[in-house]
Length: 464
Image (cartoon, rainbow, N blue to C red; front, side, top):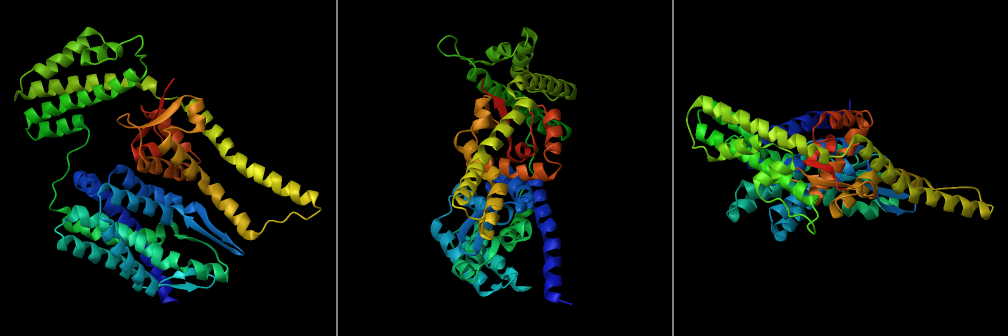
């Protein structure tokens, strides 16, 4: 029996769900702690969902002779995107990142090797060492410069990912090309050590600091108000009710003013104007004004009444702005349009190739690396196209033709991380019944959200 192989497979099978579940629980219970460390909802969604389902997508990096080297979306590219986001958000000094990455890269290089016919491998238990190195480097740098876990955790994750990718994979590119390899970095997907090294390096630090942080209250102000009411915090409960309604009004104001021509109509500014623009009667405006002006009381019945009023007002606002969300049919048409557009370069390439070879009287021949590169690009082109266009333009060509735009849950333009998280979820859409699950979600969700929208906190609205 090959005990090395047995322990390696067992380690991966056990560690993947354990690490993912630990990260999920930490975020659900200590959300504010995790967000201060840079691990917000889109990042968590990319790590857990995007990486797991992104194992089926490879992006070609190098085609040379008989060699094809890809980068796997789930096993390598998404962890790199997360690392970049953490470094940028936490403003981690590049000197610390470079030092940690270099040390982890040396460890990774020393304890890994090329196995012909298999790829780059590392023996059990030595493949723990790069992650452990990243953990202790981040801890040491943090303690030496007086930085706490909000610095140490993102640094540990980032240098664990980058150091392993560089040391085990990238520095071996010349050797891989020379021997002729068809493979991908991070090719074991979510079970690859590039992916796992970041988690193994950061999660022990997360767990070590878990208990010192209070449990986060629910993010939804109305849910938070109900929880505070049960705890006897009536004044705080009522303040959360008002906050919940104000947040919905603020979002509605953005949508309402987006559709007003400033040349002919004044933009809505006050809450009363927003309510009227949304079609509410004077009773709703009166309820909102009364809710805001009443003195904070301690009577349980009054608090329950205030919560009910807040729920009715908020749900009413959400119902009236739901017309701004696009229909399933428009999203489908936009998606098919985009698929046709991104397939055109492939069609042109094959037509040119076949016509050239046939005109020269040659037999049609495409080398294996080129065929595999085309297949790899075909499986990953959705992620690249949708992520870049929705991040830079807020829309794709297909969406723009139908007057659709992607915004975050606060109706603000999305950033690169949100766009990457949203579109990494497309592989979950495809694998889970080819968008069948997302079709049900879109039909049942008031905000017309699919899996990727839930992961990233985004929604698609009509602009015309």
